Structure formats: C-alpha cells, structure tokens
Image (tube, rainbow, N blue to C red; front, side, top):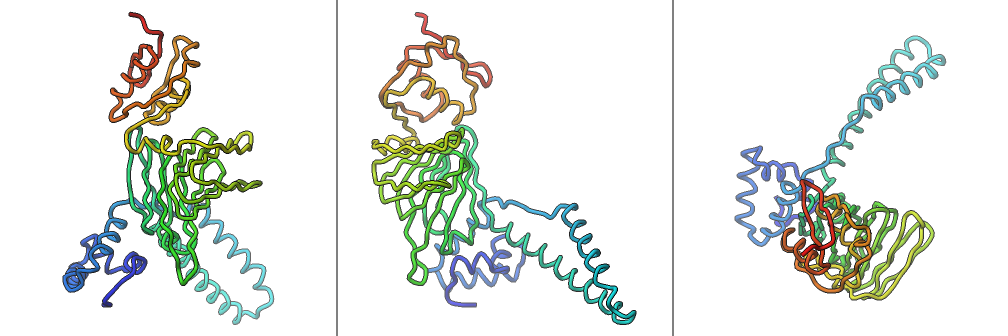
Length: 335
C-alpha cells in the first residue's frame, strides 16, 4: 500500500470499498492498520467513506429490448458477411464473432455498472433542507423539495458539473489541475447553465423559471442563444416559456436567507408567498377571497417551523389561515 491516496484512488479501490462496507475481513484489517500508521490521511479517508455510504447510488440496467436489439443486429451482421467464406472458414468466423460479441456485452454491462456507481442523487422532502460538502470541497445547501445530482469523477476532474432541480445555495471553491483552472457548471432543469468562477450564489429553478442571485465572485448564465455575466449584488431571471432573460440589482443576502431559517419580503404579494408555501411545504393553497392575492408586505419572517411561519403570515397580512389535511385556505380576517 502507498503512503498517500487521492480521493479518486480511494473511491476506485475495491479493497477500500470492502473496508468501508465491512464486506471483507482482510481488507478491514489492512486499511485499519494503514490508517493507524497514517493518521494524517484520516480526513480524506472519512470523506471517501461518507461518499460511499452516505449517498444512495442511482442504479442503471440494460433493458431486455436493448439486449434483444443488440443480438438482432449481431445476427444480421453475421448473415450479411457469411456468404463470402468457405465452410471451414465460416465456422471459425462464427466462433470469433460470438466470442467478440460476448466480450463486448460484458464490457458494456461492466461500464454501465461502473458509471452508475458514481452517480450521486441528493433529494430533500417538503419542509427539509440539507447541507453537504461536495467531493471537490465546494459547499451546497439544498432547499426543500429539491434535487441535486452529479458524477463524483466529474467533480474531482477538470470539468466539474452538477444538475439542479429546485433551489440551492452554492459556495464553489476554485481548483486547478496541472496548472489549468477547473470549471464548475450548474445545469438547471429549465434549460439554463450557470458557469461559475469561484463564488457564492443562490439558484432557484422551479415552474419554468430560473433565478440566480450572486453574492460574491462572478458567474455567467448561459442559454442556447445568450450569455449574461453577473457581478455581486445582481440577479438574473429567466423564463423557459418566453426565453427572456432579465437582470437587476438586489440585496443578494435576502434571497439566500432561507438557509438561515429566515424569509425576507420586499413589497411581495400574497400570491407569491402562496407559491413559496406550495413549492417548499407541498401545500395546496386556496384563496377564499381572490382580492387577497394582490396584498403586499415588506419585512422579515422567521421560518424555524411551519406553524411560526403561518402565524407570521396571518399577522402581517391580517388574514386567517385554516388548514385541512394538505390544504391551506386563505380568508379575510374576521375579528
């Protein structure tokens, strides 16, 4: 064993995976002794262990239709080529082709499993947030009802990228490999890509709408037809439906306050807060009085728990909120 291992080497090591999963006694003894002799590697070992155990892997498999189609193509190819060979050579040719195809199918299956084992999927339920450190050292806080996915090998490589559905706050670290800067891209479900240059920013990606608010550093928001650079304190909004991109100056900290269990409103209509409650907590909102939708407020609300949030909304808007199962009904306040 070597004196030092990179994160990539640990994740690819079969014996290290056996040690983490406690599936092989010899591997457990070997790595336990090695770690005792190399305590300075403890943090990296722990990081690799959490990656292997802490996140469920997305499993992939070849469908029966794909397998049958592959064999159909092979048989057709053999029939088309066999006419030009004498009997003895044809038999040998069939044997070679069969062996080659068998190896090819094994290689495809092995690649499929190998690729799937590094695919990470982190999801949050309604009303839940999660904070995590990515394999490259970047930090992400995932808001409720959100989904982050990535390939571990890409995040420790030169072209880092993640896919986001929902909302998340990113603090991306700068990395270089062999003197070249490692890029970092956030791909959104609604069609935009955020190219990051080492920075902190908030991304909201819901209902055909993407919003990026930059706190520090620099990012570039790219669609199929346009690229827009953001400076600190700027927000960009993109509609997948209209394909329009708009940019304006904002107080950036207000848009990421949710990670500290706070919500800031700036002349915000009740209809927008209703959407927030639906997307974050999974409620169905019913307005008993349609005029309530246009009511607006400015201020700060503590969102440590749902009851506190609903009480604050009632007080600020002077309305009554009744809850029945998964439905919230907004009505005018009656003293």
